[in-house]
Length: 218
Image (cartoon, rainbow, N blue to C red):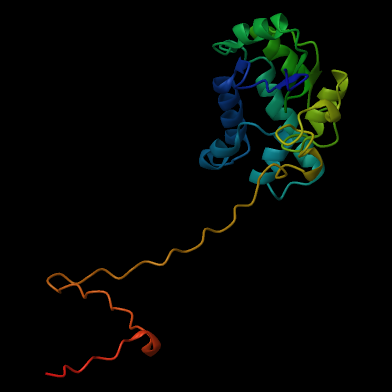
C-alpha cells in the first residue's frame, strides 16, 4: 500500500544542476560588496538571498538587505549557459507520472529565477512554490505545507511519524530526536602480567549442615 500521497522536490541540486551558476553569482556579488569569498562560500547554497546577506553583512538595515538581494538575483537571472537537469531527473518525473503521483517543486528562489532555471532544464512542474509564496522560507516547513495544500492533500495526508505532518509545527529542528546518553559500562582493571589468578573463594557451609566427626572405638 502506498504510504504517501505526493512528492515535494527541491529545485537546485535536486532537479536542476545550477551549482556553477549559483557560485559565480555569489562570488561576483561578494567581490562588489567587499565580502571575503571564504565567508560566502560555505553558505551560498540553499537559502534565500536575504538570509545569506544578513549573515555576511549584519550591519545592513532591511532596505540595504533588499537592495543587496535584488542585485544578487540580477546576477543569476541571465546566467543559464550551463544550467541543466540533474542526472536521473527525467527518469524520476516519468516514474511519478506512471505512478500517478502528484508532485511539486519547492524552492528558495524567487519565481522569476525558478522559471528561468526550470525552463533551461526542460522541467515544467504542475505546482511551483517559491520564496515569495510564504511568510517564512526554508528551513521552516511553511513552503512545503503550502505545496501540499496546493496539491490537494494538506499536511494531514502526509505520513505520520516519518512525514512532514508530524514535524511541521515544530519548526526546522522539529524532526531531530534527542539521543539518550549511553550508560557507562564498568570496565574491569586489566590483570597484571605474570600474576597468578586467584582461585574463586569457596562458600562455607552453614554449621547446621556440618556433620560431626565420629571417633573410632578401636
